[in-house]
Length: 207
Image 1 (tube, one colour):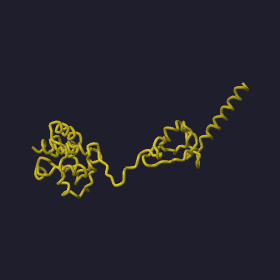
Image 2 (image 1 turned 180 degrees about the horizontal axis):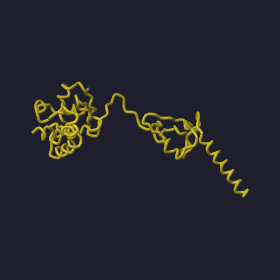
Image 3 (image 1 turned 135 degrees about the vertical axis):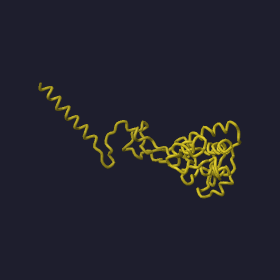
Image 4 (image 1 turned 60 degrees about the horizontal axis):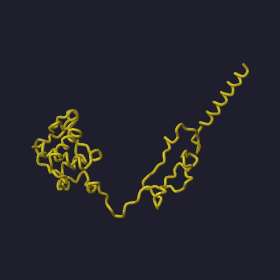
């Protein structure tokens, strides 16, 4: 009985010590479950911390280095990504330059030509993209009668009025930057897919 009581006291004491070890403050963050899930090594492209001891008080790395050490030892300059050449402009895989026109520059946008060659395959892809991104407001046939469009109100009927004569560049620009009740979709739809939607609107919806 005394042995059991002694073990109980020791167990409670051990539990108390464990709880004390969970305290955090200052640079002591206490104990954590699976710490590497919370403190992954941050390999930021153009930020290199070369001091191997940076964050050693927090580190749980298997290589024994500090938590914040993030230099790439395989790069001759210890960089995670090479800096681009000065005064160069990035292009995507198809060679497109970044679309730099501002939301209000509609006249300039109207002069931009569709770089994607029209084909049946492009129209098929455009149809899928239109249903995915546009039909909720504009409706399946572009008549402004989509479910969300009915709630919002004032959604453009792409088959009527001045919309029939809009240049392709204008439509691309509005998809990208938004206009009126139309929200900007440039961050959700790639440039190539926006141009495919334009083809579909001009060649199918508005025919």
